[in-house]
Image 1: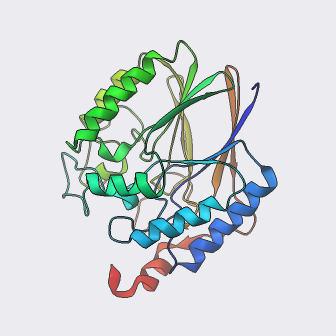
Image 2: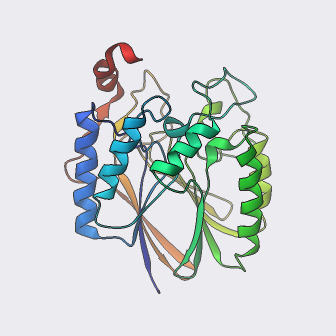
Length: 280
């Protein structure tokens, strides 16, 4: 395969009670149907509330199963719970093995690796990092084995949370620690990845579209496919809009295209909170 076309969607937050999010997913589905990439990757928050709403997970998977191309998935905090951090309050809910297993049973693998067009693609579960769960160590062992198999090939890494904001040693703050891979897991991950030709880190989670390069690695934050978070609730780092990201990989090179599907609407989080009523 001399070219591999991949579409990244993220933060779909699907649930039966959110018609605006369903409509945005349907707009993305039509866009994917028209373009037919080789693979779709959802980088997390597939469902609106997996830990307390199993039906959200089932519903989200059903909509993805209707897509005309194969999909891979990674869990987000709304799918399996969130990481504990060294600063800030305890996550609500915290990541658990039971919710991780539910994701794997209903959605699919929560970490994976494959090769295409001369590249090695690796997907990681970023929510177990710093959790102390047994699977955290298991995934690190697995990652070490995958790194040994790269054999000099360029690598594209996918995960839910961005690894950092601007620099690997950015300090954690109580207000922002939950946005990024927490320390000390972050430092350990960066050290492991330093031995490979890491060209791309693709993430989601922040609901802002961002694209920057640090050293020789390009960092792409996919926007939410479903909704935006207004400036009163979240500081503005980059572009707040719904959309998706398209990639075209060739041996030793890749292209990135930032896309907004026809018909997508910038649903504001306030609309969802109103629909939730007493849930939040």
